[in-house]
Image (cartoon, rainbow, N blue to C red; front, top):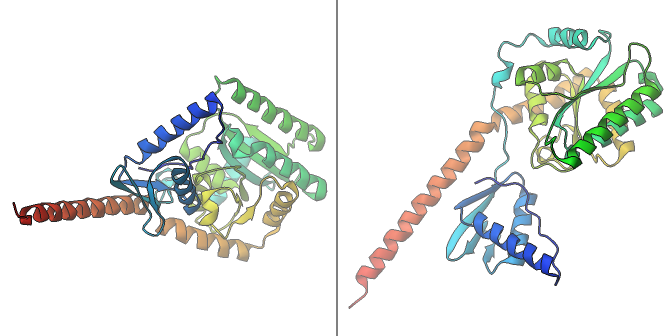
Length: 331
């Protein structure tokens, strides 16, 4: 079983807090019904150990990565999820240069315009507002990029029936409009906001057309957009700007790692990405592509199946040993 991060809720003596505690205990007991429990990062594994230690009477063994509850052990391991290699959506895609021309023509912008790309659900955890503020700060600090750089944000509608998400979409649209009014001009918008669903082939075309990809998640178990962008770039060009709060940041260390709350740092990273020499781009992208190719989704699934088979074999051996001991006990 694979799970996301587990958070320990605050405790107090109020009835509502007591109910939350009972609910937390029930969730943990349910999770510990699994033989193997996987998280994307070691940080989340450690957090789960701490949470169980706090809420349940269980034996937590951090050396063997196991938790024993009600007599049955659960292994807690790090299984960083990945993508297929090569991605099926890349099949039949035109060359990178052709994608660059096609996407710019579709957007109605200059063929020479530099493009950044963000692909997310319209969700506040993705840091879209912070991303736009970083673009705005970039144009304030480096005004020569005005008219020469635009950021394309593909935002898939998410939970649109919930008031909070409706309000978030309003904020995203309002900030994009504000920045475009401030820095835009005829035929040019610094923020190109596209709020609609795209299929995988369309998204990969944007990845291949972009000069940089900016993933600014405020909290993410892994974030596969970062790995998709890397997989799309067989030309070994383009720069990945990646939030430190993604699981992918633990693996794709050749990306420009940023704190998305630090707008100044993120604006500087965007400028660095736009000015990075081709040789450095290739070196960074080649290293990241090798990692994504080697540790792909098939390796991820295979490791879990091997671990499950190992545990099943161990349980059978232990069961046989118990039966043998019972047979040798004198009556």
